[in-house]
Amino acid sequence: MATTAGRLRGDACDKDWIWEREVETATPDEVQHLSGAAWERQYRRLREASPFYARKWRDAGVGTTFVGLTDVSNLPFTTKQELKQALDEDPPFGSNLCVSPDQVKRVYQTSGTSGSPSVLALTRGDMESWTTMGTRTYYATGIHEHSTVLTTFGAGPFVAGHTHFVLLRIGTRSVPVAPGDTERVIFGFRAGLADTLLSTASFAQYVANLLEKSDADPGALALTHVVTGGEPGGGIPAIRDHIQRVLGVTVTEVMGIGDIAPSLFGECPHQQGMHFCGAGHVWTELIDPDTRAPMEIETGAVGELVYTTLTREAMPIVRFLGGDIVRIEGTSCECGRTSYRQRVLGRRDDMFIVRGVNVYPTAILAVVGDFRPRVTGRARVVRTGDATSIEPPIPVEVEITERHESDVALVAQIESAIHSRLMFRSKVELVPESDFGESGYKTKLTVRK
Ligand SMILES: [Zn+2]
Image 1 (cartoon, rainbow, N blue to C red):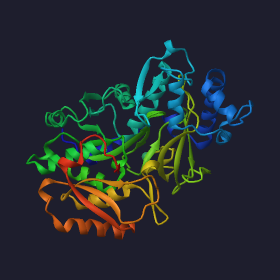
Image 2: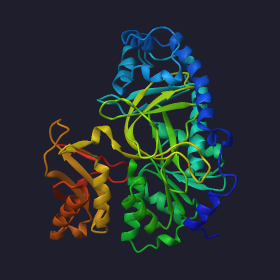
Image 3: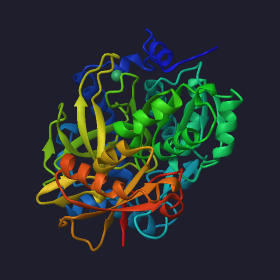
Image 4: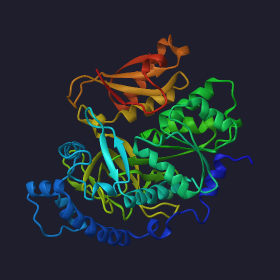
């Protein structure tokens, strides 16, 4: 049966397309109530069982009286480095393990901040709440029981492997392929095994570039839907539109946070940003990226998201600084979901300042993408030293396809587009595909030299 992007939209917007209607269409007061009750239990667990938080809160001068969810901003933030230290001081699961080790039933690894990886332990209950949030997330993107999904997320070591449980719960047909195995991905779609691709935005872009260059007719593939995750690309118009146009698909994106939940935000086919899908399991706050003062989650607000687990058994986390700077796109949606929608502007670590203005490399991707097919769509900022504030011209490396290596006009054209759209001067260097580094998984947006 022929399907098109339009069909996905129609399908996904059919009446019964919210997984957990009671929670996902709840009023803010109802969500607050649900979350408050879960937080009381989480708080008690932390007080009784976490040496890490006992010490942390004592050091921060937090008293022993109960701190309600509405006052959670009185508790100190938790950083990635602190979680790593907690692990190192009492291996293998650390001083924040709140259950006995025999209750740990699954262990993922997250990329460490420096050197060795970090470990994330889950109980059966933790896995179930991840599956619940993940199911809401992927269902929101338009992946339903009738979907046939080719996924390039490995079973491990990273938390994205949990997606396999989610697809099982939704009841899709699953076609697992190893990350980066382009040949089998293309075979899978040619053979009609799947109509949906689950991958990083970089990989989807890579596949689109590959098919665009080849003689193959992408329209002959059964593919109708691409769900991107793991990096912001799927929400950047220049990248999204290219994938949609070349592959004839609808692109929606998902997002998770390694230490909190692998799938926490899912974009519905209205394509207006990713809905928060963690109600009752995760509490989010928005803070000012510079002052860290609490901000209202309202349309147009730009800030950093902070996460508190509400139902985590093995390793509860309070006020985790996730490092993602987001823009709140809205607090209601035609789909009926009442959770806020957001789009990621970039990672805090990738941000730099040019003449007092905050810039994320994703903004450069949005400009560079318009130069296809002379460029591949990948680009990165070159940083030297640790200073956040940099003087223009900003060094930018842009990946180009081999046949455009001698495109002398291209450098000046990209520099001029960056200048007119982003208001700063850049120094563009064209880098051929063979030198830009591994394609297909995630693209590092900043390179330090
Ligand atoms: Zn929606």
